[in-house]
Image (cartoon, rainbow, N blue to C red; front, side):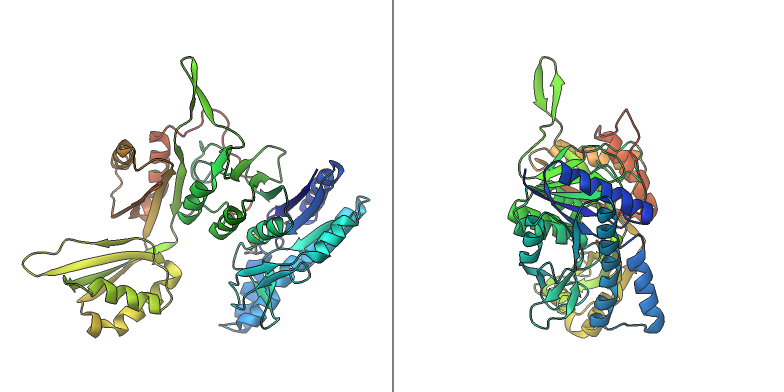
Length: 430
Ligand code: ASP
Ligand code: MG
């Protein structure tokens, strides 16, 4: 029996009852013979409440102080959890991210982990303790200041610790039974996925699926740490995310077993906006100038589409999508460079949504694309932008159409379950 790292999200430790329930589950793993390291998030909506509080005293709180404030949320839950475990007759010790050896760069509010030196955690579990670690936080290598890893960062803490401790698995406990073929909050007939490859999970996360953060999956893939996403509310097996199919998906067809459909799931995202640069001269260097201005402003973009130019004018339009939160910055950056780039005007649209179908082998299967578009058209959904990769097709539509579109595509690809409805135990999907 090896070491397991378990991570419990905010909705799992939302109140005293939740903390006691989680304590029992951790003790269970310990009784089964595992060494256990548990990473916790802040209770319920604590992080949001702390941010709110900070904004009441200062409209633009200093990054260093905001990090100091937010890390308090995880300290509360780690200490309470250790107490609850002791109350069950087992020994537990809690550690801050810094004490656990989570070393980061010095970018406040979205620091990256650069090293993990879990000496104290190792000693603690070797002495027979259950180690509880505050998620989402670390300490800067250079400044020695306390940092946070960005919203939802506890998952990354868990995977990073699992890698550094050579854990056999990183279990991520959340408020749904695993990774579903679509957001169970939107598609009642979404099915739980038993196993999904790192690559497909990365695409789902990049396409708006909130169950695991992209950065966490990236980290797990780099160090080849299997993730088991499961509910802390039910005792069910969840979803394995790994490089190898630990659970093989097969289907009976006639008298032979065949691999199940290649489609992993449908993801959606309504957090993006679309910028259209209107009246761009159709000559070399224009796109370069536009996206240089955007990149100089440190804005990450997602899809790009350039329209065919009208022969009579020699002008074209270029549209791209980006996080809504970056919209203002992008418009400012382009306006500032208007003379150099040479365009007529800018249009900004934040009422868009993105729907993505993810699965292996799409490129070699043109029928998938056709079926995807057919499903959207049958649902009366208009497509505004399209982009594809080896294992994904995404379209942009009106935000209002997104839920309908997700359900239509989910049905069209035979993903609807005919049994139990997907259960959402609480929380917001994060
Ligand atoms: N408490 C932090 C947040 O809400 C980190 C986490 O939940 O993973 O973003
Ligand atoms: Mg949280």
